[in-house]
Length: 86
Image (cartoon, rainbow, N blue to C red; front, side, top):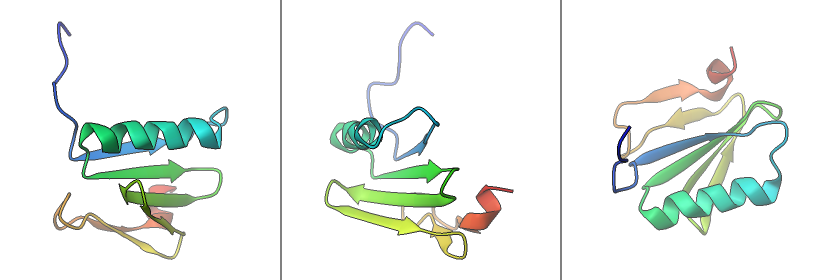
């Protein structure tokens, strides 16, 4: 593309790669939130978790039996965390 959208997405989804460090993932989350994203979901395939970040100080880790809810960012979206890893 010739240019990129000038703003942040409402939701950013970051999938943790085997080579990613905790610091690198935290930096990406901070970049998205500082840019204006309303939420960042960090999907960790190795741990089979999703950590939902709504601000730099608000993070909740969801496990396989928990339900991921899009809340106001992705209305009407709900799924079990385990279903993401099928």
